[in-house]
Image (tube, rainbow, N blue to C red; front, side):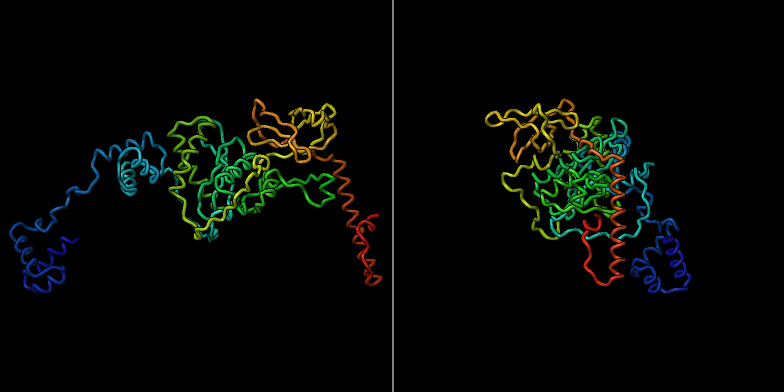
Length: 434
């Protein structure tokens, strides 16, 4: 169209319908250049107005061998990588320095589409990040086919710092989301960075009691015992915040989206097939992820709390049980039998109430009056899982509900009596129940 316009204006000038100055202003050229174009049009015809670089390849065009190599690598070794991740791999491992847009254009021309379909973004207001690193960590578990059929289904457990988006130490693969996994994460964070002020997560049963089973001691106390993770967080003075929806903990959910793309590609590239191999790839990839995605906090002052010197993190970040020593000086927890050696002076511990701890590595410890009296190496299976809580019988639960109903009726009757007789002091709950 530009060529046709030039030709029309020059022909109007030749016919005397326009002056040279008007043609020059219309084309954005000088009068001298207009005369040159007019002579070229008279000598060589309308093709002379075509730009000299028309239909020529750009001097900055990527070499054909490089283009073929990019397509070959994307269809072969780096199959399934997204454009940005693939571009980074080309520069780091293949020695091909091209921009992401160039890679995208080459792949689309070759008929290779993006691995993930993009949907139009919905409007959400993102919660502002915390100002300092260490004020809050967001943690969760993601069960996904990380090995893409080459191995078992795994669950990736990890945490990010809310202020920086850094993938914190302790991220690891397990077979199922569990309390031991969360304890391993918080222990690794405490060792490398320190203790956070709060932890933000969902209402998974490892983090929050969701059952209706109360022991007699819990009923008398008026609250349920915390979970294993909740007990450890309470001991470490870390506030637990529970999210009511996945969107509320969007930063950890976006982490899973990125890792289910990039980490799956890394695992495929390494041909990982087992849980141990997957953990090795994850450990090597964590620094690369943080270098690429972590941001600087608003306030550079760190809010991580140092673990006191001499503090026993192994004991705190472990599974806690209460038990009574049997007459044969053994403790039985979940099928495990722990022998307790004689105490000072050959004393026995039969019928003593002790604290039993299963550490993250699977080993066992027994404490009596805050003193270690026995230990045991991990079992051959090495499982670290919470023993089932002893539930109350159906008859006991029915009795508890009946007592609560009677209590409610008694309080209601007392309120009506007080209303009839005027303002009289309310009877105590024990007296009303009696």
